[in-house]
Length: 153
Image (cartoon, rainbow, N blue to C red; front, side, top):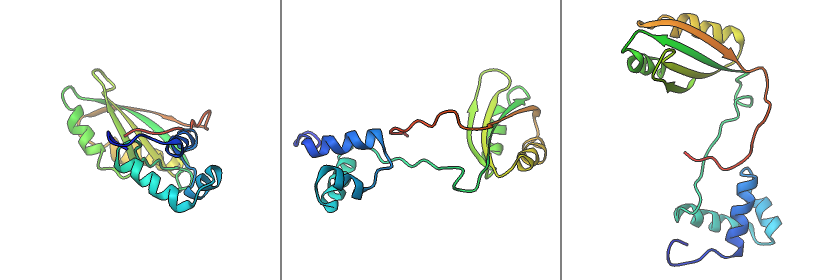
């Protein structure tokens, strides 16, 4: 791969299958392509090492015990957003914090087990941080679309 070796048809087929269904196992790739599972393992390792493809991990929140996905808009005292974001980032259930130019300055994505856990997180953790002037929350009520594909970090 890289600059010295071109991708052959097996490499291109591996990439195509993984682009469509990234969760496909080496065993399933081997069956689909009519090659040994060890061949797939070596090819995938080489594609990753040569930076042709990138390994990415995505967490399935339902299988890890979380039942609620929430977005929390955090209004902050002027000039305090970065400090508050650092404090919020220490909370275990926080998976993403986005900073904005105007209030609400922060949008926080959290995964919790229940609506009661979300309320507790808002009232007793985020709401008690100095400089937080307001909080609004939205909760996911279901999945409209889960799109498979290759994630990029």
